[in-house]
Image (cartoon, rainbow, N blue to C red; front, top):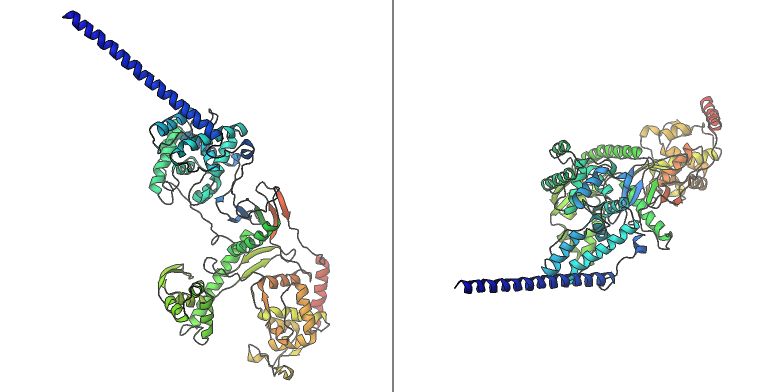
Length: 631
């Protein structure tokens, strides 16, 4: 009996031993199969079976879409032109706190590997190939993530993950053969998306904390690095609670890898997010009208200028730097002054029309504005009849309106919104240096977001009114007319001009006599027309053109009263001639254009003309003053 039992146990042991050997063989075969499969995939991907891999030549010339930046004369960024809002920055201009947070959170062994963490990569591939777990992620080093950012993944069906992972691993190793660790970190931080259409650490820092990346504190760096896991879910603007939790996770990683001590960590994790969200769009910020004018001019420049490879520059992707003559302080003062003055004028205007509207007596005013609206044009293009369009545009819809008390969200019909906008007074303001023509400030209207029409633009022309009169008197002086002679302000009827009879603003001006100084100071219309007769219309127009007015001026006596249509830019340029001793200067708004590396592509010189010395001008002024006083 005992012998039978021993024999049974011996047989069972042999069977278990055979089962173990069989199981071991299965595992060995499986491992060999996986290794073979991985090798097959590796060489297939490397050989370009699925897609062509970037070679070292391509990798050594990595370029990303970078926004063009516009700078004021005092080195303030006025705005950017971009498809992706990105600014390239150097390693030395990135806070060490960002580097530490990034390495601690995303790739603790970054300084030890050659671009690939083999253990993590094998884990991901094993799960994907054997377990068919397509959601298996992780395992990517910073260099692999850079490869993914530079060369986005393509769809290869159920093989997408293994193909992409191997592609990124190969590309990462090639990157590390070309670039050092600092360069890789810099490239990564310049390419990574931070949400809100912001790319790169410099723009993210300015957007979320309104500071340069080199000045980011540890807790601020942790917020931005924390966004890299999911830049929408951890966006501090949209989900501050999520962002705060994620920030503290990053801070803990920094503690874990000795980038922070315990005391510092305990202090920082209790701090609020401390956002200073700053966004400058094409519709907001400083010098909006100027930036739009500049954009159109620069697009023309890009079409005519080519990069070293022969292709034209792209305003939105090539990271050009545009240096302008705008003085940011003067620009801000000009914008504030325009807003303050126009707000006061609007109140006066509203009070005047309190019992009616400008279009009540002039129906064509409203209809002209209506026909020019985008909504009307869109409906007209679709074939709607006039009455159908009017009916559609009479129905209230949600919209935002401009007002001096703040933008208003309301429900209003498009026709009523047009009526509202017709009552809003508009203006343009421009400041120019008379010495060299540099444009120092450009305010094209009261609010670019709502009113795109630029009242400074050289193509925007209006009747200039009495601002033209100085050219009439200057032409008379050049013609030899004595400025001290007294001229009667009496009303005159010009029978040769269909009984044209210009009048004055004040009735008591008709009974007085004026010298040039008095007539110009009081803007007396009747005297201005008589001075024009003495100077000659052709002489006056010629002088105005020499001074800087390029628009066509009508050869009619009413030009003395400012009936000509001239742009504000032309008028400011022409007025600079008076301040510049009689020498005209052309407007200049760009000083230079460089590429993203700072290489000068074009330099715009001052079109400065020789003018009389201060002593000469002062002597002339004293002589003129003596002549006037002696009279």
